[in-house]
Length: 60
Image (cartoon, rainbow, N blue to C red; front, side):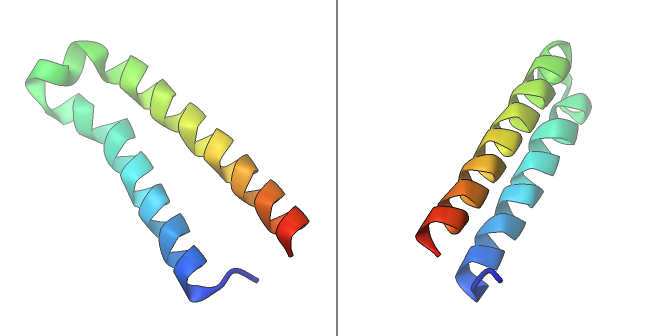
């Protein structure tokens, strides 16, 4: 079970990912790059999530 600090970090990461996925679609100068930014944010989210799971599994 994650600690309170880890849970807050995961929640912050999720909110940041949502902001990066949906935010550029509403900001006009970023609209041409919205798909690239969204894909990059989701890839980083998955990589960080898998890294966090591996860290929890081996450090626990």
